[in-house]
Image 1 (cartoon, rainbow, N blue to C red):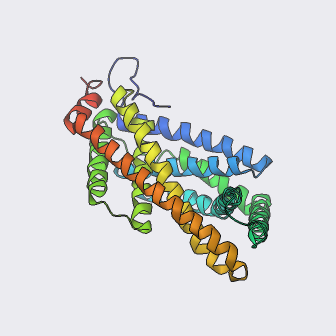
Image 2 (image 1 turned 90 degrees about the vertical axis):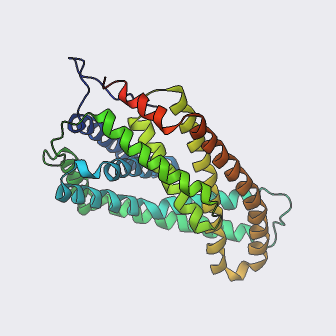
Length: 302
């Protein structure tokens, strides 16, 4: 959901300090709820929700870095980064298992060539990752870390006192993010690593727009295109990563060859879809120049 930059009761634009305080409290409460859900069951949906929320928080902290106390920010970011890493092994196992299951449904791949064994390996890897995460969550160190996370988010020294209107600073940050992403889109780099870096930039801009941008039709259209591009880039990265990991299982070479052939066919289709959404995003920015985007943010400050 897109949230407008809020106004206070006197009608004046909310300052950077006040707005960031509101954002972080809301986002931290949301993360706390998702972590509580995870503690009751390590499901793929619960793991993904927690990782996504930590990344949203990290994106906000990184974008508005100069509005935070550097020492307090470093502590907060360190805990969030460690939490993301702790959830990473289960999330990676979930993605691998889902991809192998999807490929197994392809009727062109023989089922007797080791495919079921690869699926079992992925299932065992997921079980190990879940046991490891559950063991961490039962440890006192995990509970202490979550408590440090909550204290870091509510630390009164975290946010520097700034009287600058939030709308103006947000417009400045989003304009810079769009400009950088536009340059990268126009570069047309298609290597897996370049596309992964592009995906991270797309994701951060989307998170910032969803949290900080005004509720405007042009912005909603931009968010939709960013989400579609992010999804296709994510699928490309997941399939590329799976193909690399399959080289470890040489015993099931026949299944590896079949899966990799299927992934290469899918990759060509994904690249065409990625190109389509890149062009779509550039067209949106062409129709809505950065000067117009800046006006959308400064209307509230007038």
